[in-house]
Image (cartoon, rainbow, N blue to C red; front, side, top):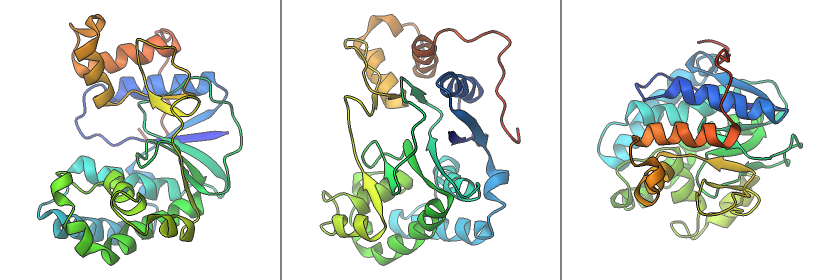
Length: 254
């Protein structure tokens, strides 16, 4: 079973180390972990138009330019859309396998951490449709989205899912989910969740996000001498065990 992540050099600390640990984690669980880059996204015939329209939409909603990081969050879905026509998983490279088996994904575009798109399953066709939906749905709801700009300093892919597919921000969210053959779930026991030091972590996928590590640093003296990003690395290593020194990442295009 394939799982993909996306890498783009945006001067983020410890990216390559996180990629190594991500790859080790999923490989140890029997998955085939594959790292995609911008070169994969550029193979999509929608790439140039997509970039232009995403920048335009972000500016219209937020009144400012989208960051390199924010743009990469959108571009990754184009990369996933260019993969072979089969069902697979995609995740952020700070999502570590904690016992998820190599089972076939459901037939819907499935977000498994609520509106946070850190761990998703689908097909290349569904990811392709999603890329067009970023444009069409955002454009259709542009006036409503402008009213929400005070909730966040950006309109990245997570805001797209949150503002359009949750009833908190869109009363028609359920019909939009059904129309687009999507499934949005959140299971903090056996599904996807943050790492916690004071409990037995039963979630099958642990998301070691920047926010998660920041909270841990504030509440656990174990990490007081480490930066947030060093804390993330330490947690990942703790979950999967110290990787072999000679293990190297094996991205397709780096």
